[in-house]
View 1 (spheres, rainbow, N blue to C red):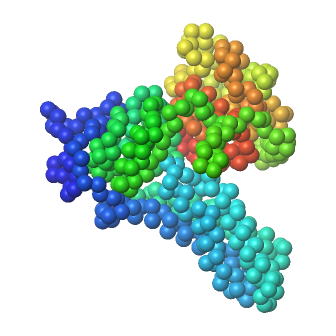
View 2 (view 1 turned 60 degrees about the horizontal axis):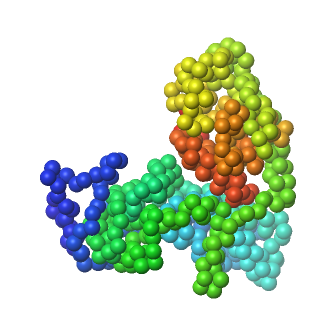
View 3 (view 1 turned 120 degrees about the vertical axis):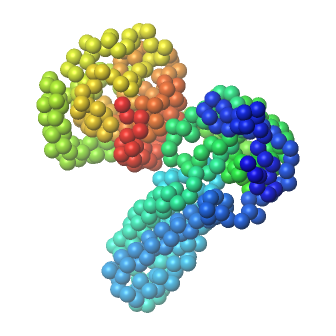
Length: 493
């Protein structure tokens, strides 16, 4: 195979094929140094759809979404105030883009391995608020009249809602137009395997691993691999990382215009409840060791009561139809009741639409012996006890809807850790009980981070992160992500 100008051809093995790891990914080895070539100096490749133009295209699509959102806001303003006010406000549109840029709304995606519109909702909120406030201020001193309170609220709501929806669409369009980032995983051992596993489970990033490199302390050797594989993002996951080693890797990535993500080697020590701050030039890791405030819990409970009551009323026809379908499909009761562990381990009776034969609990010994499980969990991909309608209900998560009653009663929450069976909770170690610090959820971190594909350790990890970093914003993100997870049906069985 002919090599490209300025690159080193791949090493050949006796079979004429490059070595691969156990997942079939090509394993790169340090090669002879090659002249460093910055990605910015390469010509754009529309045919291969790679190179720096990809990020520029995304920024332009996001800016286009913001422009349309601002124009919609101007149209709403015209409905309230007339054409004169909307024309004066349109003259301020450049300021809207300056505010968006100052909020980082065009630069988040470039730096991060994964960035969703939900992640920037706070910045979008400030953008809409500041932009509309500036418009109100300008119109208050310009003819014909200032912006009224109702009109200002309508303009603000239309700008925020439209921008969020269009930005989501712009990112979806961008992902459809461009190839995934070409990724290189640097490292071996448990940390590197954990990174590879997360990349496989999480579908919201836009990266594919094209090569793996055990490790290298040479910037020149790493640069050769980056250039030969046309890498766009390197992910460093090594357990022994010192300052000099890190400097070599940063130098090579900077020289080749490659983005760099680092999985911290002290993952077990850092945990998930940490934040990085600085005192002058001294980095400080701050641990979150406090409980959620009473006001946060009060708002969360209020939302639970309101949403569950409304859901039970609005979804009553659907609930009735599903109940009839379950009865017609397999006979027996439509609802399944089981004792699950609630907050602080208090047992409660959880409701679900029955997805198995009516004597499923009596037949449990035919498929698994709970006392002989290596870990206190089980989820069978092909459980013979599941009925025909049950498979459909599980894939669509409609079987969970009766738990709205548990939420209304205060036994569960809309969002929280998975409610686990009491027989399995009894086998948990003390360190594994962290999920019991909050009410279990109708949906939660497990449902949006892999569902049934997660191992026991992975499920505990995402639930610990949720408990240690709980916020109303995180709950909202999980609720919104649940919709897309249900549509895809990934991990549901």
